[in-house]
Length: 292
Image 1 (tube, rainbow, N blue to C red):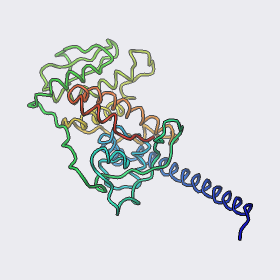
Image 2 (cartoon, rainbow, N blue to C red):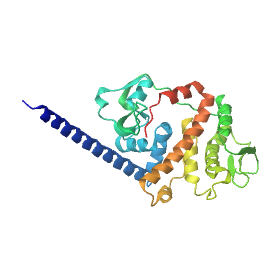
Image 3 (cartoon, one colour):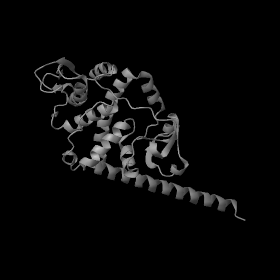
Image 4 (cartoon, rainbow, N blue to C red):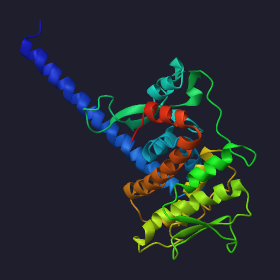
C-alpha cells in the first residue's frame, strides 16, 4: 500500500508531465501558425484563400484563421463549440476530436492569456440552418443605406467629382475621397472600401511614409473583404506581388500586418452592419467566442 508521501510524489510527477505536454503542444501549435502565416504571405493562391476565409469569419483572429487553414482543408464558416451553440448548432460526435487546434481566451475573465482550444467548420456541425448571407445589389433598398454607412467610415471628407476615372479615389494631397456620381451604387461601394482603407493608412497626413502603391495590397484586401461580407460584387485584389510585399519579414510581423488589415476590415464592416442590421450585429458581437 503506497504511503502518503508516494501519493504526493506521484501527483507531482503527473502534474509536471502534464505541464510539459501542454508546453510542447503550445509550441507545436505556435510553429504551425507561423508556418501557415508564411505560406499565406508567400503564395498568391493561399493569400486569396485566406482572404475568403477571413472575410467570412471576420471576428476570428488572423492566427486562428491561419491555424484553421493548416488543419481543416476547405473550411468556410468556423468557430468554437460555444459559437456554434449560439447559432443553434452542435458539433457532431464523430467530429469532436477533428477540430483545428487554436488559441482561445479563457471563459473566466479573471484569467489572463490564451488557452488551447478547437475551431470547427460548419460542415462538422448539425442543427438549425445557417442564416442566408447578406447580398446587396443596386436593386436592394438597403444599398443606399449601406453606402451611406460606408461613407461614414471615412476618416476624411467625401466629395463628388466627375474628373476621376474610377468610382472612388482617395487624394492624399487634398485629404479627400472623391466619388464619381455617374457610377452605380455597387460600383462605388466596391471601390470605396479600398479608398477608405488608404485614407486610414494615411492617417490624415500624419503617416509621412504613406505611398499608395505601398499600401495598395492591404487596401484592396480590406475592400474585397468588406464587399464579400455584404455580398457586393467586387474584383479580387491583385495578389501576384504578395510574396514581395512580405519578403524577409518574420512570421510575427506578417501576422501583425494581417491583423491590422483584419481589424480595419472589421471596424468598417461592423459600422455598415450596425446600420443595416442593428440587432443582428449586436447579437453577433455578444455571442461570438473570439480567439487570438
